[in-house]
Image 1 (spheres, protein in one colour):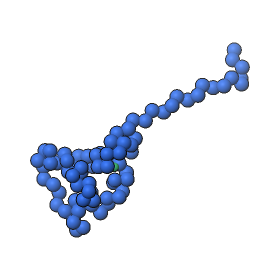
Image 2: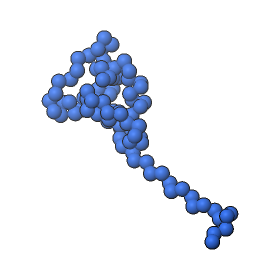
Image 3: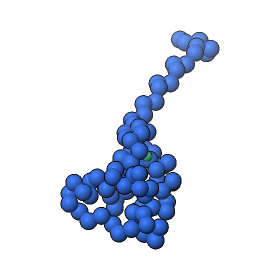
Image 4: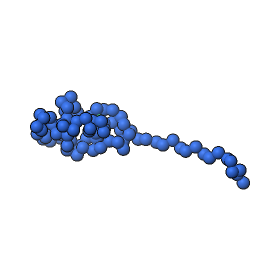
Amino acid sequence: MQPDNQPTQPAQPHEITIAVCDVCRNWIPVHELRRNARYDIMVCPICHDTNAAGWAPVYEHAVTRKLRARACDIPARNEHGLLPRE
Ligand SMILES: [Zn+2]
C-alpha cells in the first residue's frame, strides 16, 4: 500500500503543434491560425488583426500566392486601395 504522502507523477508536457502563417511566415501554434477562405491561406492573429483595413502592400504577394497559382481572379481593391482582408 502506498503512503499518503507519495508524490504524484508530474504531468506530461503538453505537445503543441506549430504551423507557419502564410502571410508573415512566422511559426505559431496551429490552433491560433485562422483560415482565410477568400485567399485559401492560414493567417496568424497578428496578421489578421493588423490588416483589418486591407492587406498591406508588402503582404500582397504572399496573400495572393494560391490564387495566382490557380489563375483565379484577385479580389478588387477596397476604398483604401488595398486588397480586402476577407
Ligand atoms: Zn502572420
